Image (tube, rainbow, N blue to C red; front, side):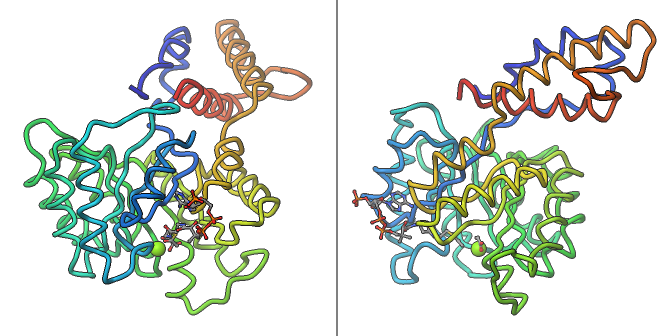
Length: 324
Ligand SMILES: CC(=O)SCCNC(=O)CCNC(=O)[C@H](O)C(C)(C)COP(=O)(O)OP(=O)(O)OC[C@H]1O[C@@H](n2cnc3c(N)ncnc32)[C@H](O)[C@@H]1OP(=O)(O)O
Ligand SMILES: O=CC(=O)O
Ligand SMILES: [Mg+2]
């Protein structure tokens, strides 16, 4: 239901404009909110929030001796139809990583529940072989025409080095598979640990990895979901990092606490002013194209194709989230 609702705007544009736009509509994931799968209390609380994505966690938010409980609790939730309190949301699950030896059991329990999760989040992806393993399991477990969105976590150096091949494999295998690659998550905390780096205020130790992750995501037309801000009481810092991530091209951010949700949801939604600027620009672009002008002046600035694409990005995000 989140998809393809703003095609009208694009359809109004001339064919020559359509050809340069790669249109893809996503289930919005501005805030990707983790909830430990073994905590019924937190899960209930999360379902009452106004949030794009709830990631019911089997992985690092759950202690080793609570893994079975988390898996069972989430399966029970998936055995019931999604209850929409505030509005529709992405009912996602984060399974344990393949290397843990727990992933298969998670997938078996969660993909055979009465209702499929909307999305499966796979942490610590390191290689094409991981994607092939995931594809094989998911394709065997999902019945009929079922399909889940697939979120790939890049959170260690080998995963980052192989990220291009990982995304290529995911996109290729999805053609005949029961999953749809939708996003890359930058798992900065695990990345820091794997790198042996120390977290700092300006995050300089992660800059390359953070930029490369968004670059890879965009190369494959995927959403890019930024690092978690673990100092959850620091809402001023959170806003600053959201704005920074959004400027870098990230489309959303991982969240661990309800207080972080409204700030993140807002920071990754273009403002009404930006939306109006963008729609006005697209209309003007269309008119100038018809007149044979590639470059023109709009609100005091030179506009040509790259700016038109930036405006289209704003419209896409705005349209995909405003009624979500
Ligand atoms: C690097 C990564 O992998 S990040 C992902 C893994 N980590 C996680 O999933 C952690 C998720 N977050 C949490 O578990 C918690 O926010 C903590 C442990 C950090 C702090 O929890 P608390 O000390 O309970 O925080 P606080 O008292 O401020 O919580 C306020 C309310 O929000 C609820 N709450 C806190 N976090 C969450 C959450 N993630 N989802 C839903 N509800 C939550 C609490 O239950 C509490 O509600 P209540 O009073 O009705 O019980
Ligand atoms: O899983 C997230 C991370 O930062 O690690
Ligand atoms: Mg992690």
